[in-house]
Length: 154
Image (tube, rainbow, N blue to C red; front, side):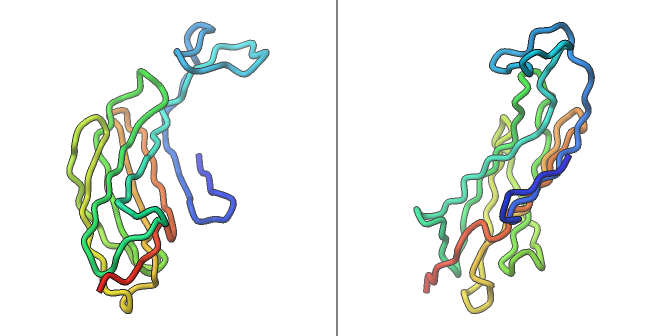
């Protein structure tokens, strides 16, 4: 399944396995479509949440080293455990990407540190690409173009 926000800056692709729900009661916190004649359940979609270490204007300094925290999670309470998160950073609007190693913190939380070039060597923004997977083979790939603005940190 794929999705894109209205201005095209964020695209997300989910790959997941799904099966018919068991019984007619959804998991706690979920609702079936009104009038649904069949059982329903939450699919094991993997979602991503970011903490970008940015200021209140969603800006980070360049040059500089910054922290990026990514949490991969499910809405389904019985979904498989998150097993990996990979990150890439771009400072040219997504034309080129630099892999950024992550460190597992537990419970789907991962941390990365990335280094930004001088303002003159960038396009003025930071774009983020992330991939995550769980033990059941469900994955998500998300690209957020121009997620952060760069400010001159000379």
